[in-house]
Amino acid sequence: MDRIRIVGGARLTGTIPISGAKNATLPLMIASLLTEEPLILENVPRLADVIQLQRILGNHGVDVMINGKRPGDDPNAGRTITLSAKTIVDTTAPYELVSKMRASFWVVAPLVARMGEARVSLPGGCAIGTRPVDLLIMALEALGADIEIDGGYVIARAKKGLRGGEINFPKVTVGGTHTALMAAALARGTTVIENAAREPEIGDVADCLNKMGAKITGAGTARIVVEGVARLSGARHSVLPDRIETGTYAMAVAMTGGDVLLQNARPELLQAALDVLVEAGVQVTPTNEGIRIARNGAGLSPVTVSTAPFPGFPTDLQAQLMALMTRAKGTSRITETIFENRFMHVQELARLGARIRLDGDTATIEGVDRLKGAPVMATDLRASVSLVIAGLAAEGETTVNRVYHLDRGFERLEDKLAACGAAIARISE
Ligand code: UD1
Image 1: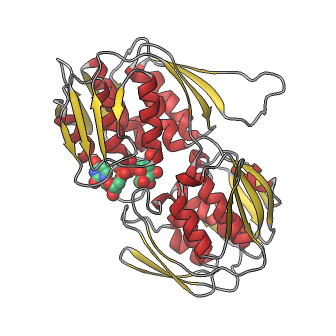
Image 2: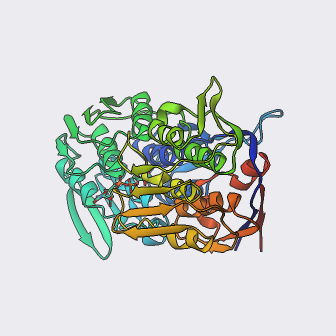
């Protein structure tokens, strides 16, 4: 199994290109199930989760084509993929496939909307709390689907098609909102989604669905209205930049010091995180090309932060911020409000010398003068990358085990950091 080896201490300088967003790519790929015509997605990142979803969609009969490059094209630019769901050959998403990635459960919505039935295994995914799907099921029921749970599978049926309805989420849910949008797009009549997630990836998917002929207004606000249509067509759509990758590298630069342009990054996608970095003493400069992050000389100030749904501070940057705050001058507090049990990085950061106390959903971090390299391992995607950030500042050698978590969500992480001067390499065995 691959490992990442880091020798800490190098400052980061240069340019890091930001890839297309994983959390938009996955639902966009799933949206291809809604139409018989080809959906062309540009700026798709090379990630293990994307490959896994190709397998899952292939099982339903989706033909996935990855376009080749022309001479002179940047070999690392995002890919263009074409997904054609002309014929759905199977409406079952089996356990072996769905258990590897939670978002694949979302296929339930386009399958039941287009085919009138879906049989989808209850999901697995990152080990960060229980992560139920009750709200996704509630949304489908509100649109007229009959739901049965049998042998670990959710069976959704709507033999006469879905019909528009009112969905009022008691809690903000990204997956619930994606599910509701995809199902409502092909339902008869009007659907109103209240307390919808406002994450930028929801807006990106709604834009793509509208290009496919859907009638969605209000995406990006808490109230989305969908006028159902009888059929959707193909479209071409470019995936928006990854705000979590952007925030992660911003924190890496804040950690090591230096000056890096995060190319293609868009500040409005992560303003809350950028504000926290400014409060910590980091220079953040939006430019025409992206966002410049710099820290020269000045130490880091501690911060107090709670995660929240967008536009709040994202839970997907919580672990990275915690790594950063291990080196602040003073005491920081980070409260996790979205997922219980999303603190698995704490004990691994402690192995590098961090001083962190956990009290329920709040971590108190006493900044230390130095971290020392050690072998570490992580159990989820964002926790793994927080260990990389800590390793970049730790004295000596840090090896991060179980790199497959990183490969799920970060494209060429070690190449991007090494190009800016980090001593980081993948060790393949
Ligand atoms: C998505 C993101 C993930 C991010 C999370 C929160 C993707 C592929 N994944 O995950 O990276 O960390 O949003 O921003 O986009 N909940 C329920 N019942 C449900 C559904 C959710 O109680 O049926 C709860 C969850 O346990 C959690 C909260 O709602 O406490 C938010 O979860 P949700 O927004 O649905 O996260 P995901 O869509 O799984």
